[in-house]
Image (cartoon, rainbow, N blue to C red; front, top):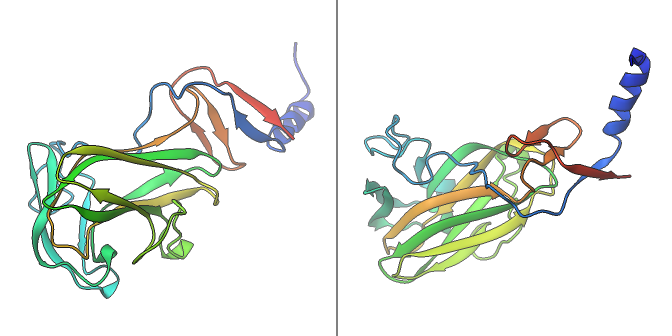
Length: 223
């Protein structure tokens, strides 16, 4: 049966007048939005001279807050240590990944394994760049700078936190480890940023569509 083009066009427009609500399901197979979260990629190093650092950036003197340390990777584990100057702010020394897409209305989980030479605080921020006024999408601040604070111990453990992307979709968000203020070395591995949506769900925000896993989309709508 054929439908008039005008009728089909109206259905398409009406579809975007509804807000999507993902069906209640188990998350299923999670998609990691970060590249090389295991620090073992054979690709071109993102940190000059550090094999296994593809996709990652090592930043010193963040915000003009000083900071001098070194980054190395051994056995697929990132180490930031040999602090000469821990900086005046926790974001003075950062390991980050750029161009991460976050979709409005989707909830995310950040997760990583870490340990420290001596117990210390680190922060993880997922946020916007200058064109977004350096927005903190994790919505948890405190101390020197934005982001989620974790108290890392001397044993390798898994740390995680969740946040909702309430701001307009950002295709250039940045994931940051903030490692300044303390001189205790930190080891990091298995870094993940995953959308907490049902497997096969279709997520729309009016101009962007994100499909998580290749399966028939299962979405219900409300006005």
